[in-house]
Image 1: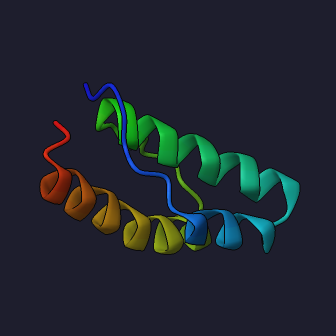
Image 2: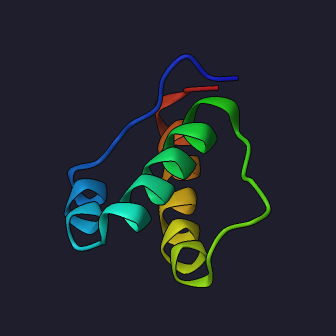
Length: 68
């Protein structure tokens, strides 16, 4: 479990383009992964594609900034 992670402005820009339901789904995925390192199984395909890019950035940021 991490105590923090970097939430980039570009994530917000992506979230603004989604419907309210998809925005909530992606927001929870970002925070659950960013803090707990967990990804739930039942993710819609469109959100899974977006999240995979964000997940990679979270991993790189945490490695770069020493957030574990």
